Image (cartoon, rainbow, N blue to C red; front, side, top):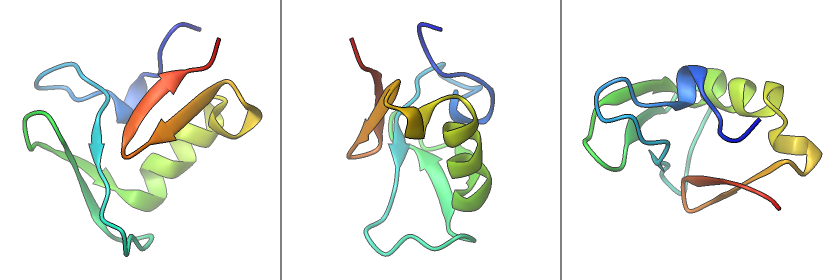
Length: 70
């Protein structure tokens, strides 16, 4: 898998760059950092990230930007 998809991929601009507030809660709305479109609630986006290998060392999230680890 080269990049994450599904809920984390902005349907408007195609990037995977989330605007995550410091005080994020499970019901916090998360927006695309590139174009500002609502991507979903943190709980569902975090679940999707984990399901795609985010917690297994395959990807890392840094300031809302998700990158594949080499």
